[in-house]
Picture 1 (spheres, rainbow, N blue to C red):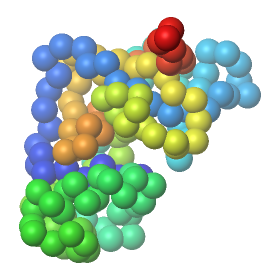
Picture 2: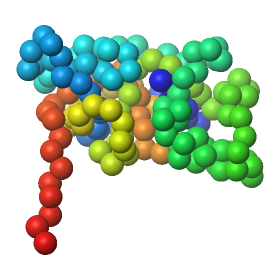
Picture 3: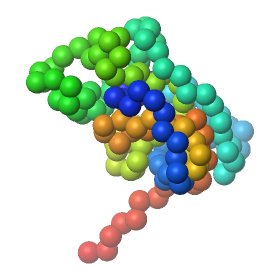
Picture 4: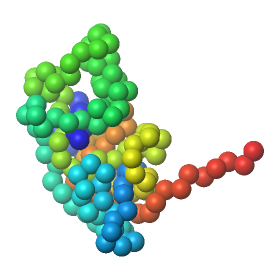
Length: 156
């Protein structure tokens, strides 16, 4: 799964960034969860670190937008006047960047939509590198999985 962004260089978090991520429970116990797409194992409440890397290899460009059409159309409206257009040439021409690896998350739980898994509150710690998309998706090199997110129901 890749994040497509016009941010060509990473930003450094000046403060902790609250984010949300879809994860699955792990057979290893209550303190572990795994990512939905790549089965990455996370330990709850501990710092997880990885490298962020981008790709121009079209066969590696499996992007979040394959499950989220709104994001790809948002990019294209910002880049050109066409409603539907193939986005990969923009990556190859260095107009967009395709982030292939890193910790993928969203700035709000609603942004994750109906993707599989349970929603978890997470923190991208101060000092982390990150890339942000036009559509509130984010990829970072560090993340802490805090706890399962339980939506607060408003009383009517």
